[in-house]
Structures are given as C-alpha cells and as structure tokens.
Image 1 (cartoon, rainbow, N blue to C red):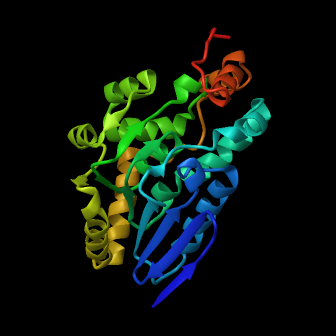
Image 2 (image 1 turned 45 degrees about the vertical axis):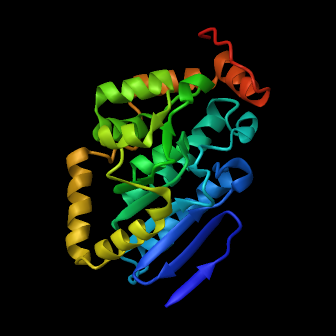
Length: 266
C-alpha cells in the first residue's frame, strides 16, 4: 500500500512498513519556518500511532540541503524578546526532538547542508546516513543566538564535550568525511547511491521485530538521559539575557544585510 500527502512543505509518503518525510522549502534550502516545525512535529505524532509504520526516513527536497536551519527571516518577529523566544523554542524543541521521542527507528538521509536546526534534528535521529556532498555546521554563536540546554545535551551525548565545544564555539564547517570519523554519521556513501542505500537499510530495520526495536530505543534514551525538558534556572537566566540582548538583534540584522556581525557582549 502506498499513499502520498502532497503538503507544500512537509511531504509524507508511506510504503508499508517504511514512512518517508521530505522537508521541502527549496527557495530557502529547506530552511524550517515555524509553521513547518509545527507540521513536522504533527507528522511524527501521526506516524507514531500508525501500527503499519515500523521505520521513518527523513530527507530534504532536492540535492542542495538536508535542512539548512531555521528560516532566519522570521526571527525579527518570532525571537525579538524573552516571551517570543520562549514560544519559538517550544515549537522548535517539539520539532527537532520528535525523532528522539518517537518509539520507532528514525533514519536521516543527508545531502548538502545540514545546519542549525537541521543539525539539531539529525542528531536526534537514530541513524544518520550521508552522501559525500553533506556538510554540517552550527552557526548559533555567529548569529547571537542562545542554545537550549536539552538540545545541547543530546549533542554532548553523541559527540562528547570537546567536539561539541569546538563545533558550537567556532561555527566551522564539518565535511562528510570528518563527520564519519568523529561519529556524527554512521554511513557515508556516494550521493548517487544514497537513496538506494537508505531504502535498503530502512527495509532491513523495518523487517526487525517491532517490540525489540522499541526496547532498543527506550533503553538508549534512558542511558543517554535525553529526557531533560527544561533548562536549569541558571542556564535559563543566561538564555533569557541572550534573547533580550543587543547582540541577538545585531545577528539578525547582519544576516539580513549579508554582512559580518559586530558583537559587543551586551
């Protein structure tokens, strides 16, 4: 059985027992709007209760990007003060944590840019498979943005403290080859072989016993302690100060004006 929902931004198809989600915003390299994040979380919720779905694959439309991050053009409205920042992070967290919270195996199929929110999302998937065009970066510090504690904890669980400090503080670009070497991805294949490899891999996972897979996911979740839903008070205080800062406003302006930001630490 195959059915397809042609949503203009989050495309969903099911070929039992594998469901495929395609993030599609090609004009902005598959950047996630707030509306897309809400749809993404809702899509995972629907697939979670579908007994015929045993494995979920997520990819980006086209060949340029997996998910290039959040749609920064929305930040002036959605992240302009502490209150709007809190709502923005609530919606963002629901979307990017959806793979980790799902009881079903989730595979990220990655080509091109995997940045910001896309990087967050990929880290929360169970297995990451990349083509050689894939690259990864976390530009939050270059945009003056705070980063939620529970989301950062998942990066540390996967990569370790030192590598996370390196990637978040420098905002540097990580190639697909380096990503494989540091354990950020599990498989690296030529771009032209990616779809076939992922399909075969997903079929293999879906053929496994569902109850066994559920035990593996729940056990890994508890081992990694990825259930933290709130920042400690001292971290939240720093996040609130960042959301209200001049530097965050400067980061938004600089991005819009395509120039290097000038941060002043206030």
